Structure formats: C-alpha cells, structure tokens
Length: 280
Length: 242
Image (cartoon, rainbow over all chains, first blue to last red; front, side, top):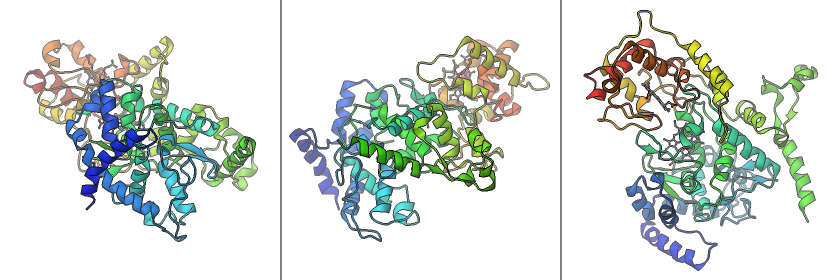
C-alpha cells in the first residue's frame, strides 16, 4: 500500500539532497557516486541488486518504523521522539553515522541497536521480556523497523563515530585486536577474509576493510538481504560471520559486538553511509 | 564549559555500570585472587575499560564480559570457551595490520606444525575421488553460533571450494591459489603426495601463518577423508584434471 509513495520517495530524496547537504541522500545515488569513483568488484558484484535499490523493500520497513517511532507505546505510553541518539533528544539526522558513541547516561559505548533498546526501556518502560525488545531479527520485528527508519536519516552522511571519550577509543582499539585475533576450528580472524582486494569466498565478493570506499557499503546496515528476504542489522552480520568462523554465539548488544562495530565503523570514516542498503 | 562536570559524571556512570558480577567470574584476575575475602563472599569488581591495554580489553570482552555464550556446546564435545581460546599458532599468527612475522616466530610455527602431523600407518595413499569431490565442496560442519551444525545426520566437509578453484564445473573462491589441473600439472610422485598431505593436514609447515585452516591437525578431516580429497586432486579421472 506504500508502494506508490515509495517509488516517489527516492526522487523526493534526490531533490532534497540537492536542497542541502544536511538532508539524507537516496542510497542508490550514494552508491552510484562511489562506484564511479572507485573500481570495486564488491560494490558492483550484483547489477540486479543495484537496479532494485529504488524499490528496496527496506523502505516499507522504514515506513513502519516511523509510525512505531512516533506512536506512544509501552507501559509509560511514550513515543521515542525524546530519545537521544547522540545528537540531542529527537535528533535523527546524521545520528546513525556517528554511532557507536559513548553515552554518559548509560555509562557505555552503544551502537544503534543497543541505544534503541536503552530508550525503549528507560523512556517507554519495555523490559527484556517484551516482544518489542526480545525479538531482535526479521523485517517484522519492532527493533528492525525502528533501526531501519532511524538509520535511513543518515544516508549519504559520512561515517564519523566520535573518538573523544576514552571509552570510545578503548572500545575501538579492542575491536581492532579482536578483528585480527585468530581462533576457532578453522583459525579464522575477521582479517582472514576482509583485508585483501578482489577476494571471494566461493562466488561472494569480500569487502576489504582497508578500502573505505568499499567498506562503507559493507557496514551499511540495516540492509534488505535478498537471500533472506529480511532486513538485517549490523548485529546480525556480526553473528553470521562468527557462525562461519565456528565461534560460539555472541549476544546482541554485548560489549564484544559493539567493540567490533566501533572498529569497523572507524575504518569507514569519512565515506558516506548507504542506508537502507540492499545486499545479497 | 560543561566539560568538567560531564567528564566527572561519565566516570561515575562508567564505574557503576561496569560492575562485573563477582559470582560468575570463575577466571578472576590475580589481584582478585589475592583478596581472599572475595572467596567467602563474592564481591562485585569494578572494571575500567580505559585503564586496560587494547589486548587486555579484548581478552576481557571475549572471556569476562558475558558477550559470548562461553558454555555453548561444540560438535567435538568442548565448549565455546575452548573455541575462543588461542593455541600457540593462533596467538603467534594474529598479526595486526602492518605487523610482520619475525624469523624466530616463523621457525616456531613451522616446528609446531611439523610436530603435529601424523601419517597413515600404511603410508600416504589416494582414496576415492568421488567422495573427495563432495568433501572438497562441502562447507558444512563445526558451525555453532545461532544455528549449530548437527553432525549426526551429515559429515563435516573440507571447505576447499570456499577458497580454491578446483574442477572447472563448480565455482570456487580465490583466497587460496587455483588447484585446477593439480595432479596433471604436478604428477604424483611420493614427494608430491607427501607435500600435499602435509598442506592439508597442517599447511603452516610450509606456509607459516597461512590463511588456510589445519584440516588434519584440527581434526576436521580424518585420514580417510584426506585420502579421498587427495584422490580428487591427483586421480587422472578426477574432474580437477580433465
């Protein structure tokens, strides 16, 4: 039912992008510019997916997220409009591009997922047991709807996770160590698969963390995954790579997962976010 | 102008929130062990992330922050904790960007690898290339996390196609070199068979700190399975050599 509006949306966004640099830019335009600038087989591996981006099913999920975001919900009957994602209460524009960051109220470095959960608990009164928080994955989950909406407000904006607070630096640096740390049945570290150009696992092209212009797409989540028919989060990608690595389960929003995400976001610093993205 | 107060608030907040519940940390650090009273009544221990080295914090996050399911059972009967614990080769080969393997460490890794290799009793033989073909293709096995592989119904594979092109009829990866025409190009002398067996069993014996897993030394493949995969590489009838 949103279909018509959705088709018009990219055009509206493109126009908006021209109006001022502070507006979110259509993800397909961001990607197009990157493709023209760099010669990356990772960015161009799926022409079908690139063509599908204006009709990305993730936009529907974002629309539903917007409604959830603005609706008073939970035991405290509050909307999320006062939640501070780092740029002040209610400010979404560019907020996701500056996560993870340190939040003094929580005393922690948080990514989008954990910050969202924090606000759903403190402002709306949800608990871990409520489905609104307990269901972490899938396009039909509140968490993914909300994340997709919030993140879409950072499309085209350069990744710029702050490194001023010592906790932010500590988490990023520990994430870097974890990225290069080998273990498990197959001796894998993240670096095994993500530090060289033009490499593939079977037919999948592997993004290289040392190439920010291609790495930005790798870390652009939420993304609709065509092979899953669901919108997925950064947290879900961490989980999937750890599964391939034969590592045990990692908890959503855990400090280890946030350290990895802090490092991988820092590695894309300065390159524009592509959200929502569309991936294989 | 808010700088001072907000920093103070941050420090206060981080100390309160970063309390590790004493009761669940079986592997507490030296200082806590010295504090005998903590044995009788486990006390919450404050952890300051910013006071740790990146290495120490990484180890803390992996083993003591509750991030991983350390007790998750594995297919080999161990736990997630064991999967995350590094052996000497893994530790030595965890090189950060720009860091190079020293000659001393290269020798150490190669010696450890050489010591790990066990040979079949009757010598290295080739098995059934058709079985080897499926083993080389299969990436199944030992995955845990959110969706553990069940070995009872299916044997673990060798993952070779993840990283190598082998027979041209299937698409392989390119983290490792192409092995197309392997036996045809190299022949199957005893030395060639031994070299190949060694590489599959523990490639660090020739390529210290390689990205290729130790399929024999890590018990992913048994000797029969290695023989089958070797047949796939060497047999003139194998599609690898057609």
